Image (cartoon, rainbow over all chains, first blue to last red; front, top):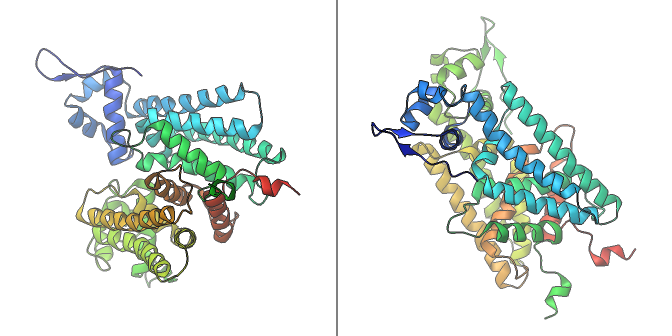
Amino acid sequence: MSSGGVRANRRGRPGYDRESLLRVAVQVFNERGYDGTSMDDLSKRLGISKSAIYHHVAGKDELLQLAVDRALDGLFAAAEETAALRGRAIDRLEHLVRASVAVLVEQQPFVTLLLRVRGNTAVEKRALARRREFDHLVSGLVAQAEADGDIRPDIDPAIAARLLFGLVNSLIEWYRPRGGASGEQVADALCKVAFDGLRRRAAATGE
Amino acid sequence: MSSGGVRANRRGRPGYDRESLLRVAVQVFNERGYDGTSMDDLSKRLGISKSAIYHHVAGKDELLQLAVDRALDGLFAAAEETAALRGRAIDRLEHLVRASVAVLVEQQPFVTLLLRVRGNTAVEKRALARRREFDHLVSGLVAQAEADGDIRPDIDPAIAARLLFGLVNSLIEWYRPRGGASGEQVADALCKVAFDGLRRRAAATGE
């Protein structure tokens, strides 16, 4: 991850590179909603003029594009990595879930913004289309695992896929990297619940 | 659920009762974000003047209060119903999950708004406090089920509680009552995944 920090310029006002500007903007979008954030709001929060912002990006839209692409590129990289694996679909599915949790934990503000996109602009529509493409990859894996006989037959594969990624996406609502479980611990717990269930198994009780 | 409908008044403009006005307002809040919605936006969408809105409610804040209370009252009713049950904590937990899914499916727009509350106003802060109280009830049940030895010991109960209600809450993102699975089918699938896992069990493969 780039470490683009805020630096003070000669007049003592904060200076930004594109990366640090993007991070602050995404934080504001997540607090106020993208639609509810104006360039004035960004300018106030950043402590720089609007024209200083336009030095880095063409506008709000470009900031959104950069942010959702960061999240989506991570998820598609996880999907490509998964596609290159051999083995049963259920195991590849679990790999994809773990890799997606890692993306979500590393890029939490960007994924949060992505998951709240409503489709009001061209950038948002494109982001939603890429999200649907990713969902399609997931449902394909679930369907294949079902065909392999590795998923319980009493759950509809479409609902299973929704629940699985609903569970992953719900992390943005509560997971905080500081002071809590590590991303890996959360991925472990999530995969145990999703694939093997919360209830203690008969086999496991025979201690 | 109240069926408060829109009626046309003598001048042919739509008339609302408090319930139908609330429903439209909640829809607009969910589309634009509560912070991003002005009384002017509501007035435009409803097709009535702001003073006509003030005839029903004191303002945006009261609409939010009515909406989040609808969701929270439903969840607390489910919790009280659960508290009155006997039996093992794990089974009461599953009952609470089912009942919460029912509330979410029946009151989806209200719960959606509740889950997006950010805590910027007194009404929002109160709603967040009630949500925390509900979460506390859930974690209590999970901890008790863990103490009973009914939850797998390799998952932290706090994470288990988060995952469980993350899974329930994620329904607002994709569950649509029309044309899809019924609320009961979704509750069934969700409880199977959460409590028993997605993977076909060894016992179940011996057909």
